[in-house]
Image (cartoon, rainbow, N blue to C red):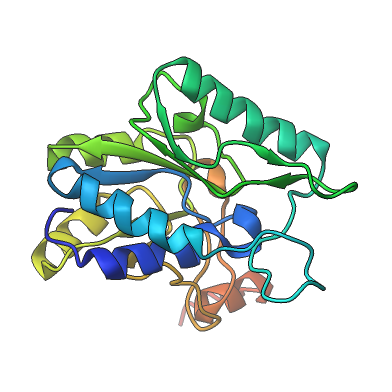
Length: 220
């Protein structure tokens, strides 16, 4: 949101998006940014992503590795090309890295002005691509964020506690990070809504999955 601490938001996004090259179940898939702060956010995000080093992990200072296989690379690449063809702007990246004989390495990528007509708006990416979607209206952006069959994790960045709580209650996801890009911890329940799963791991809620419940009725 426009009142967010943008440095905090960028740090949170970097922690969420680029773990395992964007290939975890809770990596942020779409980034909605208020138009009022969009240029500043893009500038800060690009500067942070310039610090990523793509390579194999036995090389020094590597932060970002390869995609897992050819199918994963083809999915990431096709989503980027689809967005470009439909009017999105590639701010940085957008290409395969070919310096390695083996492996599917892809540049850390920012794509601006993504919308509902593009594949990456609805399909999970599982790659180092940040689709940035501008918004102006709070209710509309909540509707857009919930417009997906998935519902594992959502992230909200705002300095308003009232707004954070109100929006988090409206998010259709099992996990909501408020000013926190990495909210998953062992002592908290982990799991999603909709097609992101049933049941929970972690916390006392996760223990319930391993219990045999017995109901005893006694009439005296």
